[in-house]
Length: 604
Figure 1 (cartoon, rainbow, N blue to C red):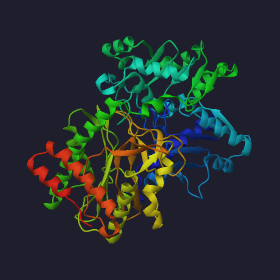
Figure 2 (cartoon, rainbow, N blue to C red):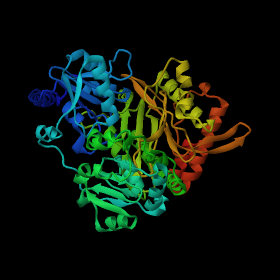
Figure 3 (cartoon, one colour):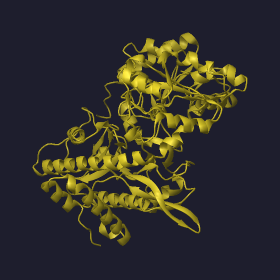
Figure 4 (cartoon, helix red, strand yellow):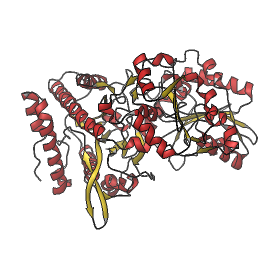
């Protein structure tokens, strides 16, 4: 897309104009529109893509703020270049998060609004904690109030708003889940004691009930809510989604079904035991529970479920390993296809590469979907961290430069996430040097041994150290958890620069994905998924290490050999030998020969 042409700009200005009419009518001087839904989701059903609808920016993270005369949108470094293009000519100002000259959302509002003016939020799509923080900052610093706007605004403003998804839910087989719904509920009850827990996070509900669905693009979850009391479990979902077998399965585990629309009216009625609201519960829930909060019978605390879900059991770990083999086979066949196409001079575009990789994965057993929209970014597009090719932006690959390919799949026994940066022909010295720096960082983190009590922030520098020595950095995280046939982004643990206190513990999956991005030129990222495993016991405590789950060759052609140490080459050679030994039995003779060449030993 040309930076000077934004086909949605006029429509976005029109939508903002209509929103301002509602704001004026109801006496609201600004509205905050986040990216999420009533369940605090990172990726949301089309029905709740309000921020994308109002702004035209379709990245997964961002917050729009519309006042009566101005508009701004905050997003992180993954989306700076994309947001610049998609916000062009909309009159929405891009606010680059974590940049020194970027004001916070509340400081910006304090500068454009007057004392005693009002900022509106939809209580169903804003968390209680975030809204409370905004309210305190706005009032204490600027004398500006925070108020709730009617959720009905959006249905009226957005006539073609998509309906809630209606596809039926499915039961995740016990052989793949590894633990029954009954046992998970018992563990949760032990963790919360004599309390009632409200669960709205969709992946937490899917994990607890061993249910999967297709309500969110690439995330196999079911739009629903769950209330867990010391004696009962109450599940709220659209009746059309619950088939007789699924309903019977839920009943067999003591789960009582309710229509999704009844949740808000019912939530405050579960007052026999003290209520525990997770810290990210939406404002509508806390508003409905005001009486219980006032009486001291409702508290806010982190849910115990994310920490439980993050540690995979033996069945889930086995599933991940099996899924990685099939995903590796699909990747090898795609890379052969790409190489042959380029050698014959046949046209391959970013989109056709994306489609071929998805096709290869679809042939694999237990494949259900991709795990996120593929990032197939050639040349300068690689510098856009979360670039996704469209019909408007799609370009042909040339026999030179780098293709950054970040992709993944949802298999019933595991979720995958892999990035490979592929040379398509001659490379510049900068491209080769950047590639080698990224590889060195990936290897350093992969080789880590660390004691119990370590969090991801303490390991993050391992992936960045070689770049930092050259004055280079990347602003996204180095690693995130991955669900077991669930969301590709999963917490609470992460590997990133800003402090994330969750410990890295055996059974956790986490990605390793350092990168370098040069605007207008190229991008490099190399990503493997890893499993935290026990390492050794010493006089100084318990130590852990990483098992590399991903099985796919890392292209050795761009490597600047003089920059690599013997230990790094030894690690890479050992990894490639394992890739070959594991994948070769699943490939034909031609594919095996190709893989043998791509994984051959590198000499110093």
